Structure formats: structure tokens, C-alpha cells
Amino acid sequence: MADHDTSHDARGGASVATRPGVKPSIRRPRTITSPHTNAIIVEVPQAPAFTQHAKRAIDVGFAAGVICVLAPLLALGMLFARSTGRIFCGPICLARGSIPFEMHVLACDRTPLARLVGALGLARATIVFDLLLGRVSLVGPRLVEPGELAPEDPRVIARHTVRPGLVAPLARPGQSALDRDVEYVSNISLLRDAGVLLGALVRRR
Image (cartoon, rainbow, N blue to C red):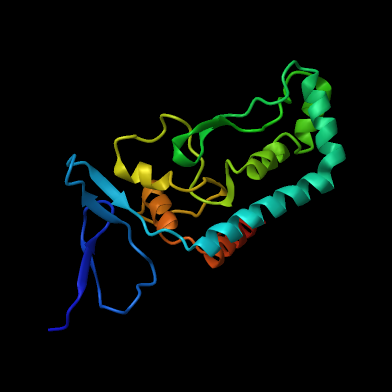
């Protein structure tokens, strides 16, 4: 009988067997128990350094390009929003490491001019500032707010090891959104990100 390695998925369900030297098409997170605290830990494969740096370069390049192209309109939108007493009033979301931050969404609901800015779609265009600051990525696990996920679930800690995405992969039928997040974190690649972005563009048509 051939040798094989066996690992469990993040939910402790059926084990996944792989032959030595054969890479599965989808890498699975591993659930282990800490020998010191008996806490359940979900280990996810880390993306190669080149992929991480390339993703960050794409994020910065995209954000800088949008800011350069839309600079006059963004400045106008921020000026109108400032007339309401506050420029940004976005939701509080969780960045990498479960760190909360307020998204850069223009406050465009208090004056006619500000509402016009919102109608032009500029209210959320300023989210590119979060992209530039490294709080989010173009593609990543879905954005969540504090308290939306159970912090005691080890999968939640695993999903917060990377930046959340402005665009997130969709869960397959029968798959929870949290499991999909962890699966994405375990299989980060530029090709997968391109597929997620293409799928989002197709769905918007």
C-alpha cells in the first residue's frame, strides 16, 4: 500500500490524503492543538514572498492611478463633504490582525451638493486611500465589521492574517463564507486574484 500524508481541514471534518511529492490543486488549512494551552489553531499555508510583494505593488499602483486620474473630482467631493462638518463617515471594518479602522467613505448625505457627489459615485471612490494605506487589498477575504464573526473560532484568526479585499471570492454552493475566506488565504496567487476580479466584472454586466 502506497505511503500517504493525511491532514484535517479547518473544521476538523474529513481528512485529506496526499501522496508524497504530489501537490493538491487546492491547499487545505490544517487544524492543530497547541501542546501548551490546548487551544485549537488553524494553520494556513503562507503565500510566497514574491506573491505578497506583487499583490502589494498592484494595490499601490492601482490606488495611485485612480487618485491621479480622479484627483480633481476627489478633491471636489472632499470639499463638498467638508461642508457637512465631517469629510469621512465610512463603516468600521477589521484590517489584517483584526485591527479596526474607519473606511474612507465621503459623508455625502447632508447637503444637496454633497448628495450630488454621492450620486456621481464619488462617495466610495475614496476607498482607494485605504488601499494605498495598506488597510485593504484589491482581492482578499470579505470585509467584516467588529463583532460580525465569533472571535473564538480559530478560522477567524486565520482569515485575519492577510488584508481584507475590496473584492472577495464567492463561496461555492454549500460552503460558508468563512470557510471560503480561509480557503482563499490558504491558496493566494496572482492568477486566482485575476480570476476573482474577472468574475466580479462579469457579474456587474
